[in-house]
Length: 536
Image (cartoon, rainbow, N blue to C red; front, side):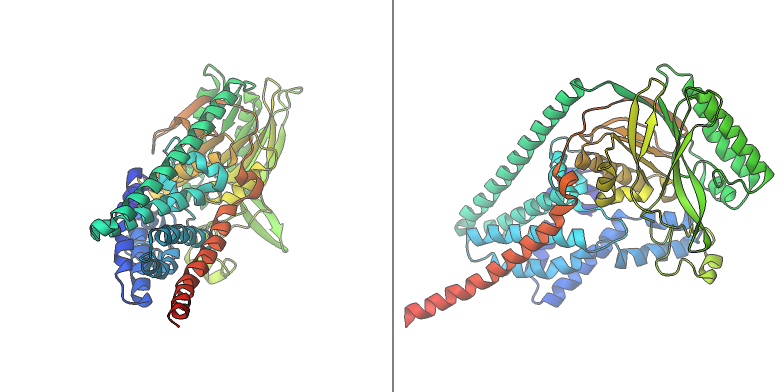
């Protein structure tokens, strides 16, 4: 419960520093590794229920399952895909509790070892939603700046290490006066870690503030949040022409109003799958009419527009549907003519929503779950280069919805000379409370890791503009029709270790944790061997 409360939407982030302590205490008392595994599974299962309850809402809204079957999907998710790394961490913690009893130095070494193992396993063991405990620090103005060094895994390492040190302090204090030195030593180490993290965060924030002062202007961004109901979106996807008209009107009308505001947006962004149908390939006369209406608005706006739509290509000789993002840049030298179209195809598909691993081409599954997308996967990260009405060239780094969960994907996107990250999504399938806040928190960390500003547009929210420091400069209300018109500073492209090396920290942490475990495992044997030689 403490872990769930530390994450969005509750955001009681201070609980993250002690949330694992009760679990560590319980594991330290277990008589066997098997019992530790059992406790690890229970934490993994309960976190899945308490922190990802919105999975049931998604199953009901998107897959159109009954609430009973949706609850079963949530139970299955919590039992298998929630946080499986906890099963493997649990026996290590039980082992570490015994190793830590030898001395103050060994106790601290055990804490570092276990934090590294936790972080490494958390990073490398696959799960459906790749978000770690470090996400609890998304709103910590200074602490989140560590993410540009080692990404979200480094934040997880710090949080887990503090929990371990608190745990060993508690164990030492329970021993009475003999444990006082150990307890104070562990608490002092917590202070050193906190001071170092805060100092680094403050220095990075000052550097960013200086970069904003030197920025070569700002990009005036307009975001349209149509808040189209889920039943309407499902209806137009099945061919309901009235629903398609309602979908398109929900975005075209606010766009007209947005274009008349002062200051005038230099670029307009719509969320994922907002153009109803397959863009550039109308399947009926009515679809052709809607496409013409949309084209006329784009030519009239005379500014770049980015929007989500479906696209259809041939893959392996078969027609394949794609979840796509399009950017249209007008021809300013020839008003009233079609502009340049750029396309990005979603590469990392969300399992069991956009694809079913190994079964997506099975006819019987398509018949039983018609609401599943069964999309094809795009070739990989991409970029859009658009030119604003003022002649400014801006490189956008597009990614769609769940792709923001992947540090590797967003980092690879940012490496393409990107000025601004562009994240479009559709969180309305998950309900109003939980996942939308979670997804926004992840977006903040992606901006810190890559040191790039970010435009985030979602159909029902939360749409936002995010600075490279992770600060949200504007956000929309949730589950309401809304528009944002905000100037986003175009700061000089900054570097970070994550941009250079990718998601390196989790892999390094696992290797370091295993090496430290070997050192600790052999230390007692060496001591016993030395003692036997001394007696002889």
